[in-house]
Structure formats: C-alpha cells, structure tokens
Amino acid sequence: MQRILLFVVAILIMWVNGFCAETSDKCLEKPEFKAKFKPSLIKGEGDHYGGALDMELSAGYYFWCGKEKEYKKKLFSEVELNGILVTDNDLNQRPIRTEARIAGSINLSRPKIVDRGDREGVIVVIQKGIYLGRINAGLNIGHETDQEFSNQNYTVGAELTYVFTKHENWKALIPSFSAAYEQVGSYKSDILDDIGIGDDNYQRFRIESSWKVLLGDYLPKLFEPLTLHLDTRYYKDFGRSDTVKAMDLDESKYFAVSLDYTFKEPYFYDMLSGVYLKVSDGRIPPIEENSTQVYAGIILWGK
Image 1 (cartoon, rainbow, N blue to C red):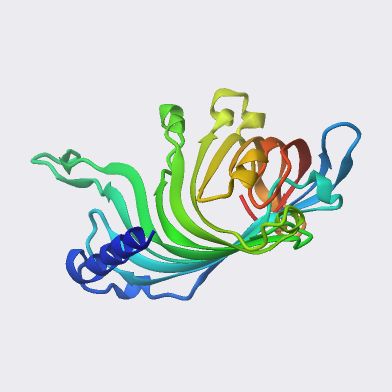
Image 2: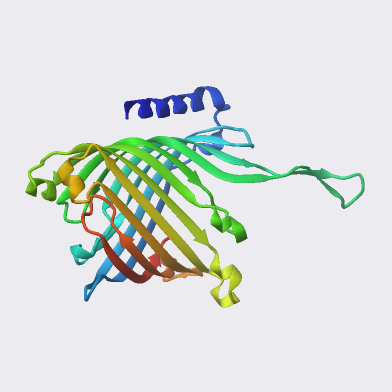
C-alpha cells in the first residue's frame, strides 16, 4: 500500500514540475459546485416498500492548469458526498460516502485545426481533432457508513480514473471506470462486535464502471431525452479474518440499470429536471446484506 501511495505522489509531483506548462489564469476560477437529488418510491424484495433519497453533492477546484491546447493537464482537488437514505433501513444497498481527493488529470484530446485553402470557400484540414477521454490519477481519503451509523469505515488510498463523455452511436460501448486500492480501517461495526473481532484493518481493491446509451437517438422525437445508464461495481478485501470470509463479507458486487428521461427545460423554478426508473442488485460495503430494489422517482437540479 505504501508503495502505491508513493508512486501516485511521484506522478503528481512530475505533473506539476515536469510535464506541465506555465499556469493558465483561466483555470484559477471559483470552486465548482454540483448537486443532484433523486427522491423516489422504492420496492424491495417481497412486500417491502418505502421512500428513498439518492443524493450526489460535490465541490471541486482546479488550482493548476497547463496552457497547452493539446493533451491539456490539470491539478485539482474535490470533495464529494453521495449515497442514499431510505425510510426502511433494510431496503438500503448503498452507504453514505464522503470523500476528498487531490488528483492530476490529462485530457486525451487535441483540437481540429483548419485553414483557408487556395480558393475562396475552400477549407483545408491541417490537423484532425482527437478525443479519447480523460485520465485522472490521485490520492483520496474517505468515510463510509450505513444510514444508521452502525457500520463505519475510514479509507485512504490511490485511485486511477478514466472518463469518456462521448456517447453517440458505437461510442456508447466505451465505459468510464475507476480502480482504487485502499487501506480500510473499521471505526464502528456492530456485526464485527457481535462475532468478537472488534477493530478490523485491511486492504481493499475496488473497480467501478459505467455506460451511458442515448436511447433517444433510435426512437421517435418524443423520446429523444431518454437515456440508459449501466453501473457495475466490484469490491474485494485482503487481510480479513477467516470468520469474515466465511460470512462472505470480504467480497461484494453491485449492479444497476436506470432509464432517465431528462426534460429539455427544467420545471418548477428550474428545480425539476427529469424522471427515472431504476433496478439495482447487490450491496456496497459497509452494507452487509445483498438485495434487489426497484426505484421510481424524479431528478432535481441535475442531469
């Protein structure tokens, strides 16, 4: 773990001192805030029903940017809070997670360059534009808990992220994903206390991937804002006790598929931006039980 952290720190230092050009004043702007809330009705297994609030909050600040136009590099910090609150705790698959990170990014793109030709009205392409996504590499610290705060962990680790934002046609097959290796420290765990383990410190590998498909491109105009979202996550712990492994708490999977219909113009004072239907299965640690849920709700302040 220490070697991984030192490696990422070295990359960040090289980003600043070696690979990057002079600071660009355009990058030094006020922090960027984002918020999305998705209240919904939720149905669990059997006759379990309830209400849920899915939330995503973030604040980011790019405090260093290179001036180059091709393969632009940046250094940024970010704080995120995401998770879900459910009226019935037994229906909750996702923890509330707060995370802070510092990372460097490089855009794998270059602009298209054109010039006037020899004749009027003729445009000559000097350099073709390229977009291959963006790569982030950084360090993060976090806290994760179930909504009753009966199972809580602190985490610190290194994370590599690939972001792809072009979703037209075949490009929808290209996922965005992140992979992280973390040191996890158990702050409070009712289930570990019950089996007599107490504090638990271990390592965890996690990988998350997502796809977005613009379904509206293949449907009548009325359904143009319709999008399909796929979300998969996998967590594997190392250094756990045999008792924890026997309870299948050292590995978890999560899968979700969502249909979102985003309005062209938001309603109700720019608050209501869309509706959605979602089905999910599995669990995200430190949640203990696997389950299948169906959500139907609205999207507030986000797309």
